[in-house]
Image 1 (tube, rainbow, N blue to C red):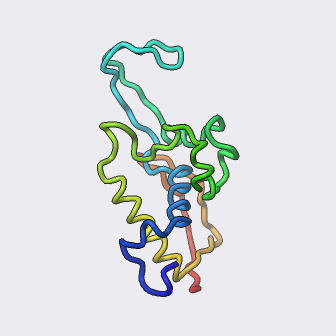
Image 2: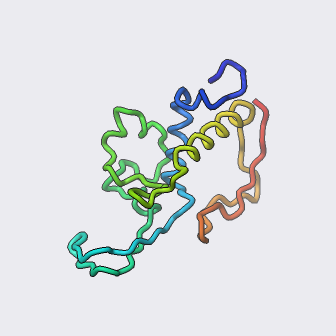
Length: 155
């Protein structure tokens, strides 16, 4: 990965597989699972009339698991983000930080940090779930595991 030296910010673009792992994890388990928007004008969306001023609720969690956009949509597959495969993902089918002028302004920083932390931890440890662990999704303001219990094992 980095030849034994600690990962640094300059390594972010070189950590292609790690970046793909992080993106795939964000696809399947986005922190923000539901968002709202307000229609600024009367519009039709998917055959439905939406009046100006209406509040619209949508779910990145549902969109990012849609079988129309992803083969094997519920499987963890970091290789789906390889350049030759990611071109097949529709434009707005992956938006864990939202899109447009309401997009999270720290999306690039957050993804860089997630990749660097993942690379640093994975270089030293691998993890296994332990007895009593429950990785099913707990829904609140954010999504998180119910009771994820892991044992770190030195590499």
